Length: 356
Image (tube, rainbow, N blue to C red):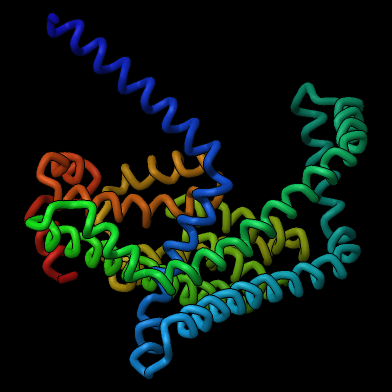
């Protein structure tokens, strides 16, 4: 076989393989998305589980306590956001009176400067009204699916924590005896690196929530609590999450107040917070735990969104960080680790030693 044919066949197999892998991941989302989320959460709660077990609490009870604790924290976040949304809806009439003059000016500008006419807007509104039934059914189905995945995730967390020793031994037994130490080392480093990233992100979200709340409260922005919580939570999505959080803040804050002071306050608050996050919190709180190249990170987030939506974007970084750890320890895959990583081999070796 000539080199040209070999390249053609290899490229074809690669493209076909990527296609079927992508299609398979999309189809397997109902199974894999809750499971991977549970794996990440279980790794996050692993030190707490070990601490409880050191107090002579049996593993099953310890796993149950951690699962219930995670569930209560998540329910607390949902309750806080729900309360703020109800407050926002209750004040909607006042906010609408403030914002309507600006909306009318914007509509007049659009009609004057673009080919869009009032008839076009009315037509779109009528079509949207006609599709409200389908949208309501789709929303109900989406909530039903989300609720099932939400509860299933915590069930997975319980079993992953309870049977973690068995799963670890399974991975060790997959390889030859002389490689068992290396496999055990990879598992330990993957756990520590993921925990470091998740704990860093958690602390970062707390700091951002406080900064956002203080800044917007100082400028008199309404609904600053829900805006701060949502924007901070969205920061778990690298790069894209901050942009989405800023847009939500503009929408909720400016719509509620309807004046330029709120708009300026939101812009100033987010600018200062992003500066502090990029140059203080991110390097010292999150640090180099995952050690991924920024360009590869963006690609991973985009691919995660294409495959599984928001949950894919959130899981993309810790999952890719675990994959990178595996690549670091498998000699034929080290070039891929170099591609994914942020730095040279010496820096990676230093990071590995720090997690031993």
